[in-house]
Image 1 (spheres, rainbow, N blue to C red):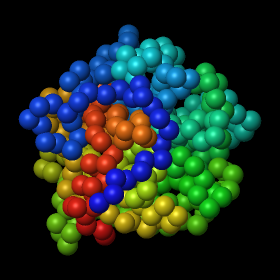
Image 2 (image 1 turned 90 degrees about the horizontal axis):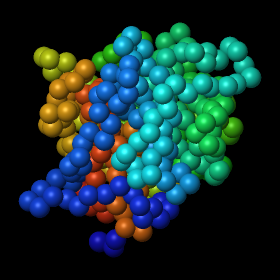
Image 3 (image 1 turned 90 degrees about the vertical axis):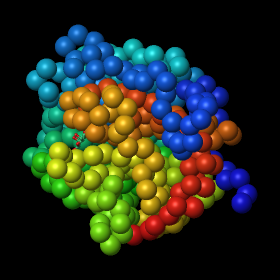
Length: 334
Ligand code: BMA
């Protein structure tokens, strides 16, 4: 099989640690996890499900924090190496022209996607229930609020890193106002990041018919899809219900480059499930929740940022060519 091409920019300083000797996992955890611990600064009892991007030769990010009232906010952060972070002590203040968009609503599970010279933050905001908030920044200091993308109830909004067919594309997972015991991934397109339409179902949760219990309750997009010669590489979370609550694991899929609502391949097993102590113990045990992937295009090295147990932020690594080959070899599309 020819080596796939990864259409990401070169990122020679991507955080990286080689696969440990004797480990044959496709995704392997950073030895220094968690990169952000449960008490990263005074008054904060959790920092997780957060997004980072390359920025001015270093790294910037938007982080979900949890203070002692457990109301979630977003904080900006900077890092030289993608591992040691300086997080702003105050939450991001969104500015915007329209007072009817609720700037003070809760904010969680951000993704950050650079398109041209602008970084877009997508997160779960509130508008009579969870929906998809959008903001733009060029410097990670000033954030301009845009219209909410969708009606409530919706979570896990993820923008594609470029327009396709002249339109912005966003994945999302329609949900309920609570902990949502269902959910499939959909795609919507927009000419202007304000008006969204042409909604398409991308992929659904697995059930008995598929033998896919690890993702049988709901699924949701993780990091922004990575463009490759084999399709858009989508890393996502799959959730199962158990007698002790939900378990969040990680899977992958390849979506058609021109018609990304069409799934070409999809892993028929999880690639990572909560096993480390920091994933199985925390405010919400048994959650691994990927929100960002940094990729060095030429080498295909990927650093995956994920929240662990709704408590701390962690890193895992993989190689794009291995992930693509595995996804093709162990695929079930439904
Ligand atoms: C989801 C969101 C995520 C969280 C997950 C597990 O509904 O709230 O932020 O990680 O539940 O608690």
